[in-house]
Image (cartoon, rainbow, N blue to C red; front, side, top):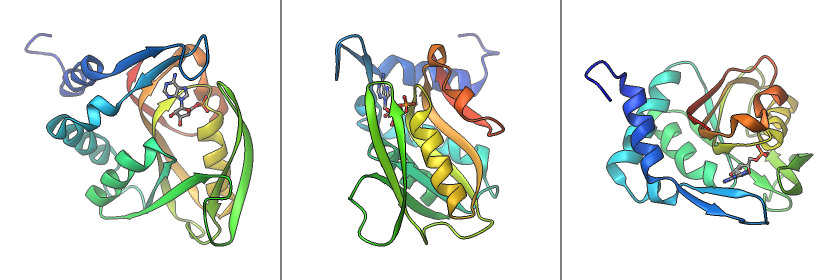
Length: 181
Ligand code: AMP
């Protein structure tokens, strides 16, 4: 780091220094990126929230967070932006009428759901999660938003596993990652 290092690069380096890697979790061959140490650091997580919210200030009407870790930063970012927060949840967790999308994961397959009235037609929606891996989770979330008539403004994650090419599943959608591995 030098005096000319951009603020987002300093933030990225600070976040990288606290992220924990857990080899072979939850299945052999996967290196799990654990961002709970970031959440445990109030000053650093506040900087991340401020950084992401600043990028989307007055550009979005809702923030969608993906279960479960996307809820944590997503809700804080929504609060910071002064817009509503919408949870996208795993199958059979939401109580009211919902849209449902099946998708493939880096390890396995799953279903994501969102309340049908959670996003209104024409609303601009920011999607937040901790990690973009193969992109299936984010793509399914974007599909749920589109089914409600919403427009996906961007997908914003703390960490992108670029070697898995998750962005390729999100054509035409701006994708932001604080850190790319
Ligand atoms: P994907 O659909 O493959 O992009 O997977 C993204 C979702 O799975 C996110 O909700 C992440 O929280 C989680 N995930 C996938 N791979 C990892 C990983 N290596 N470390 C931590 N979380 C991961």
